[in-house]
Image 1 (spheres, rainbow, N blue to C red):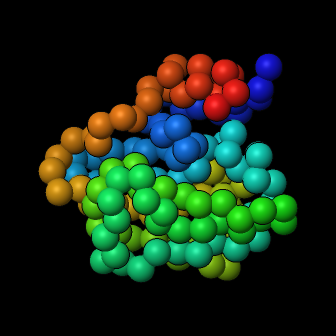
Image 2: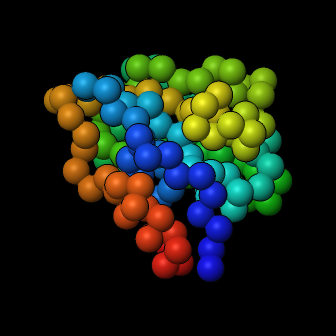
Image 3: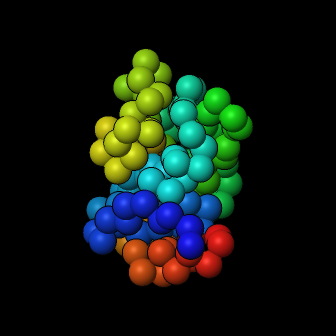
Length: 132
């Protein structure tokens, strides 16, 4: 059985292992505990610029770990309103506290509410345990 790590109940998830916390038209996005464990030690975060627009499912940033480089995708279409500048000096926050200090960016959606296709914590756990 795959170790799913922490899966906070108040968040939504994507099949590409991002977590999403939606608040009105804005969403805070990071990678899940499962994803950071798979990547191992994050050494660099290529943050997006404020004001950059992304379509749902497109690459917003790259995470570089000691073993690979991984894409992080937009959970919905929107504009970056903030990137976690602390990660420039402390990329290890993504590993140490993926749901807290290790958040990656905030998107503003064109309309209020969560984008379609997000998974509940239970759906995400089943997806990961099923080998996703």
